[in-house]
Length: 178
Image (cartoon, rainbow, N blue to C red; front, side, top):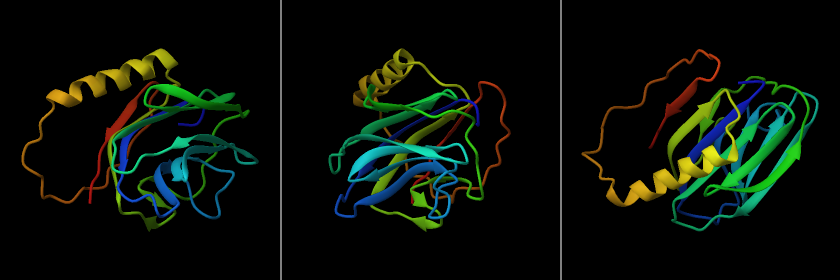
């Protein structure tokens, strides 16, 4: 997505001693500061989003080790918002569409460096900017249902690569684990 974006996911970081963890992002890496978007852990949860010539960093709050947290970010071509557990924690303005470079969507990585000690689930990437009430409801609904949620046997098949085609309002949903 370039003109509008919502990213949502749950994460549990087992070890906070490494200050940087790439959680979910597109076109992130050492040479792509002004491009793409990422939600990462760098002592705090933060969102970085770029339009090709500049970028903004939104600063969230500290994560708690070994605790599931819900993170979300939205962008509407003028303002970026960062949310934690259904509540807005920061916002900033940035004009123009998101510009991408060479790196694809990644989970638990920075460029080509993969991070362990983090579990990420329920990743949703939408080409619309969801409103705060929608994000708060989605968080609360997931949180309330967690008590009655049960897992079946672990799948042993390796994840496969999937290519997505963007359509207006389409949500991409996927989860990966190592």
